[in-house]
Length: 164
Image 1 (cartoon, rainbow, N blue to C red):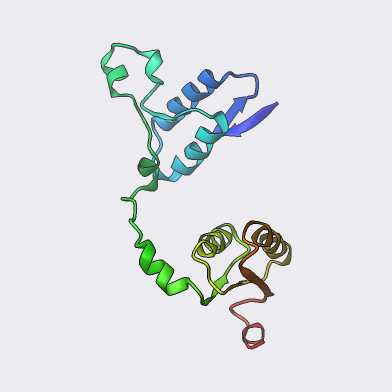
Image 2 (image 1 turned 90 degrees about the horizontal axis):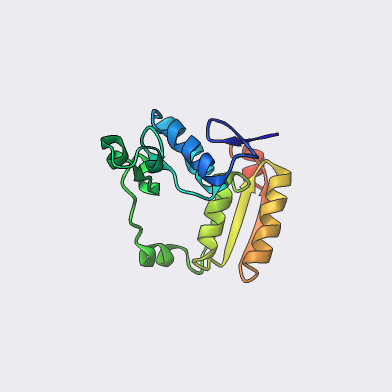
């Protein structure tokens, strides 16, 4: 049986060190498009990803071994991390009603979670995907019981669902 690791396959019988070496090897020639898969693989293998042709243990004391380094999250972003002004965000959100379109998707649901930390009066989660919207509604009720979450089904491209 195989499990997906990065853009390839890593057999379950492979140990964590071998898995890290495999990921390091595959990461050596990747461009920015593959980095997300390698970041996910890092967490599945519960080890670090190394940037270079092989893991550092493969060529100790060699020039290649000196070039190997741990890959940081910032390396995978493809841009400099953004520093947020949390006080300003809180001023804009706290005590207000905030609508999140696409609330049932991966990004929209994370936006709902992040907004909830700033204690809005309510979050209106708007999406056309009923089942995932139900799931984020349940999650919000469990994780943020002090926030009113209002799941609304509709499409932003349909005036009828936007007007009520």
